[in-house]
Amino acid sequence: VDYAEARRRQAEKNRAATKSIQDVAPIPEIEDYLRRKACGAAFRLFCETYFPIAFHRAWSDDHLRVMAKIEKAVREGGLFAFAMPRGSGKTTLARCAALWAVLYGYRPFVCLIGAADDRAKELLLPIKKHVLENPLLLADFPEAVHPLRALENSSKRQLQQHCRGRLTHVHWGQSKLVFPTIEGEDLPAALREEGLEVSPSCGSIITTTSLDANMRGQQHTRVDGSIIRPSLTLLDDPQTRDSARSVDQTHKRLELLNGDVLGMAGPGEQISALMT
Image: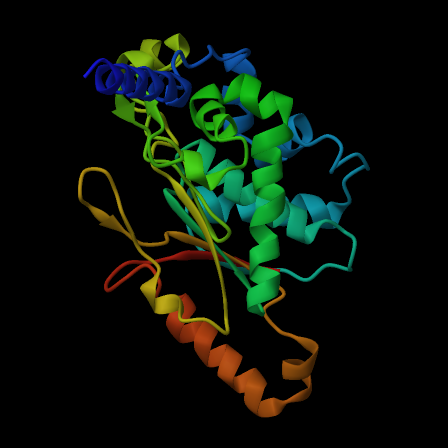
């Protein structure tokens, strides 16, 4: 009996220790809220401030026009395709646009689309790396980044992660990233002073897929039971070399773009889309 009781107590102790490790409270305070707000009003400033290594060269006039179009598509809506030379940063701009859209709550569901499945999976990797390693993102967006960083790049830790007993409902996968649900007293003071009850990125999603996949099933059920579909899609080089050589494949991809991609938002809804 003593042995069984000892095992029970040890099991309870282990569960308590595990639960303590899975608790991401307290959420750190925002280091510079004025800097964060300023970058929310200007996509160019967001890129320059939080990704100075990626954008260390001077902007060209083409870059400035592209960023203005990206900003309008994200905040107001619209369809925009742009072509730039290789190495000019168009894919990096698209990824930063996805982060900008979800961190500030402009778009709750962003879908990144590549030409093929292997390319699509690569689109999410740099975004996850920024979440894990970018110190300034953690400093100014702690309610979004701190819980994801606490996973330490392990999807096994996501199911029971919580903040003072409330699940964060994060998801850390190869083709899907769900930002934490942080609300109420757990929010940083600067957000509570603004009158916010939940974080701007609460439950926001970034997914990846390809034109070769079935894109019609892109949807996500939120904590409150509501179902949301992509409101912004970013297509990166949707044509492969093989498809570019084929008239039939080119027509097929155009049909996918005009049908499946632009219909991802659901019946009666208008999607915003950017294509490099």
